[in-house]
Image (cartoon, rainbow, N blue to C red; front, side, top):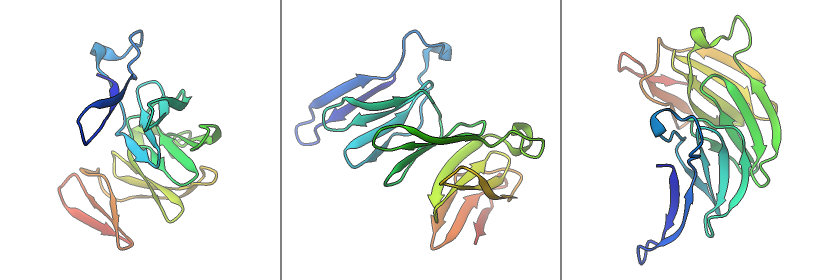
Length: 183
């Protein structure tokens, strides 16, 4: 329904409620699309169809709003929030103010096009790099400071799961339901 609320876990009463769904938006069939909610320190971050917001977790007030929406879970660091759209537009913003630091379009050449690479399905911050996984089995390693591609590799014909990092290795399940372990 597009509502975010804070629930007091001791007495089960609602602390605050916020409606993120824009009734005048063009969201098909009235459905609300969003990324998974991320909570860090005293803020909650959620990206809807049209925008990404930082909400004060204690009082429910909006800290800032960026007119950029995504279904991919945002990555939060100490100073930054990273957002990526499924079609390859990546953005870095200051976590306190929401001010955009840089933004890049990854799929802007014949070598990197959406049809070949596939939609971006997940993003992880690892070793000061952003790791993007795509539907068609690619990993992209992005410099978190400027958004430039450091490296990329085709790992499989497609991914079934999102990648996880354990003891310095990347684990992911491909479309053939095989577990892949990469250094």
